[in-house]
Image (cartoon, rainbow, N blue to C red; front, top):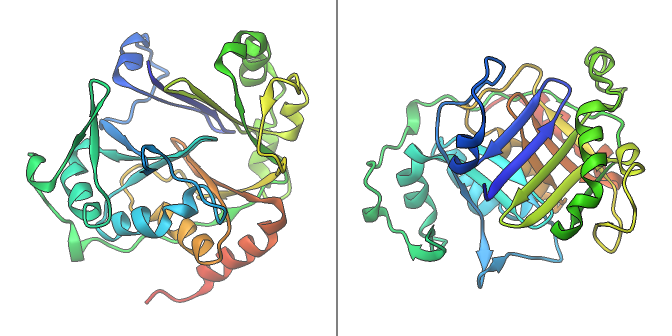
Length: 293
């Protein structure tokens, strides 16, 4: 399994993993599986994840990737990590994705460890644009729990040293699951995300959980920035609606505000710098008051 992500929210655990990892999962009546096969895309520059001294995370690709896909009514599942941002799209939408993005990007598919160019004419599942008949995205409510979060990484060689703590935090620590349901705007919520993708580890946790880990093993940006969460959705969002990521990432990109974005089985979550949370919430609430065009 080269692509593994586990995220705990108050509602459930979301697992994203590749086909090899999925084959290892035992069947269970408690396991709910989204029926589509998804392909992870990430934007790289000269063979490396793109970097910028400006906005980081999902806002770097809001205008060039996320907005164009939303305009073509392609549903995306977003997974930001410490190292890069993955935009997961359904395999059946690949032709639309390639056609939409190939004007601005050279597109490659990894085959046996090699990067092979992909063009519209190479994709055989047919180009079908949903186009004008698709409804505009619902403007979902946004909430901001009080937790302060860290986006961190870890040397894979040191993973055994924190394995016991990791399992304890994910599965045995006291969780405000019930209390957080009553008023998420005031309370902290349980949120922990761990990913191990192509040998790179990324962890998102709140400052309370961080205290349980050895400080000398986890590393973050030199500024040690703390993040606040914007949680999107009053009811579970599902996987078919398009434009949810765009409606959050676009205004943040316009304001040059960094954001990490993590989709889960039920809701979406954007992490923004702590100093920007008030302006972000005001901006998004105002966006929801404006009449649709």
